[in-house]
Image (cartoon, rainbow, N blue to C red; front, side, top):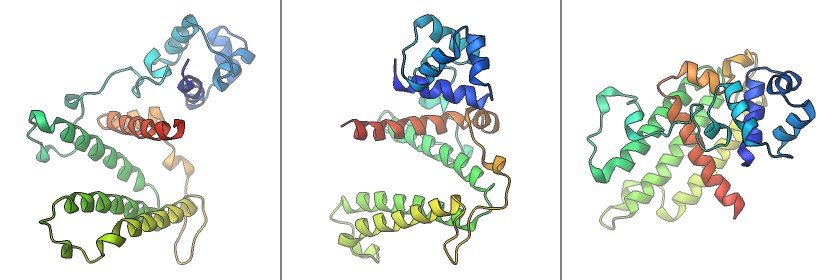
Length: 235
């Protein structure tokens, strides 16, 4: 059984605000056994996997972490909606991967900035946006530098300093953002406070309900990103 199973089982129960005792009763197992499943201390059988999938209304593939979609779908290029219908790409065989990733990122950014509007902290907005802009700057500069014909005078920061400088600036954005979302203001910045926490409450259900056309892009971006992280951690 994958390690994702225990995480997703716990996540689904808590998202639906079901007590562990109630879930155990409904699933026909003891609370102790369900606790072991949720903590990854025991592996369940196929019959329980199917029962749990039916109980939470998701697919077995989703419970096992094989698909980021509750229904177990595998997303394709055609499945991803255009965030901006006026910016449709003309897809050729050699550009499918670019178009796919562009739509995935664009749609995810639409979800991200929509959530960001609910946050009344200027620091969070500024540092989140700054972090993303710096990431784009780093990648663009790599691509720009790929051709020796491109004049480096296009940039005001020296090539040898740009990447490390961008990393440092991103780290500072990250630190200020972390402080702000934890309610710690760094003068003269502000912090997230005096607002209803439910405004930023996010789970699989709320994402699917609030962003029905963009939800798939967001969860697939998360899955792809965590796949890269896990690969590093496992090495």
